[in-house]
Length: 125
Image (cartoon, rainbow, N blue to C red; front, top):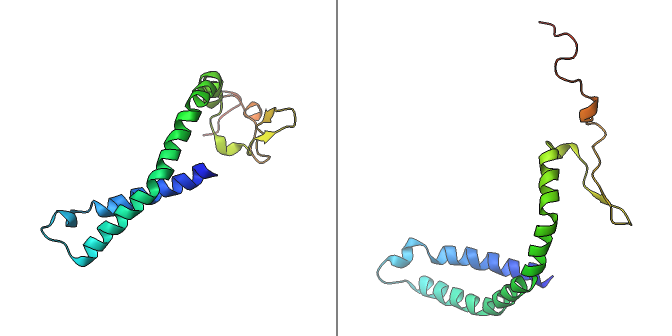
């Protein structure tokens, strides 16, 4: 959960910084509102710094595991993505107690095997 909380902070910082970087800061002289906004965003960034550092540490910690996962599952996942043409024809995956994962076709979707092969039968014009 700290990861998700950190991401919320990152999103807030990105939005805040986009507001701060507006062209009005380039004008000569600033109003009290602009000065207040600058101080607010500076304080916000100081408050977020520990969360951002924690997020950076977490990313460095999980990188080797994530890379190992991608190296191991990558070719199989690519083959699956090449095989399935329409993901909307399937229900969400079901994980069985033994770890098997089932991808069930939705009941209202015909199986590719049930479709007539091209060139079979007559075509009415």
